[in-house]
Image (tube, rainbow, N blue to C red):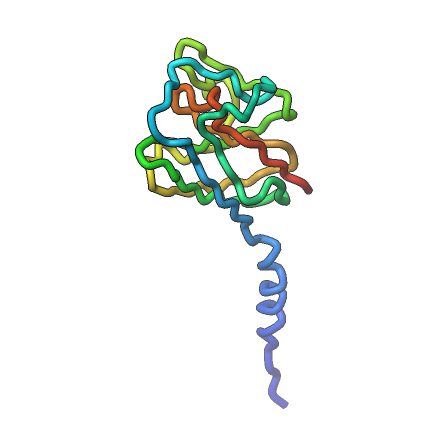
Length: 161
């Protein structure tokens, strides 16, 4: 009597486990109102500042505001015609937290705060991607080109268990 090894069982088990490792994709659009903008004075529209966001000169749109913890890929597109933008991902404690800001440089202090990565300096009309592993909590997504953050270029992402 011949003995046959059953090779299909381990392959079946791996196939069942694969979906739990699938990454979540968030489509991100970096945008501004276009045309000539006076960004010499930040509008004070940073996170936790409760400014009038209807006055925002630019912004970040995401197609998912809440995702499950795990691997997340941000597919980022700069829809501006001629303005450079970037995307930085930083964990925050809550929606009222203000990020450390360098007034003399008109940008968030990336060295003082914590961030998980970025899609750096995209020219208008170009795209990039960032893949990170996110734990449950809240995250700020923002552009740190001088004045952009204070002119409203940020959004919040919630990550659940």
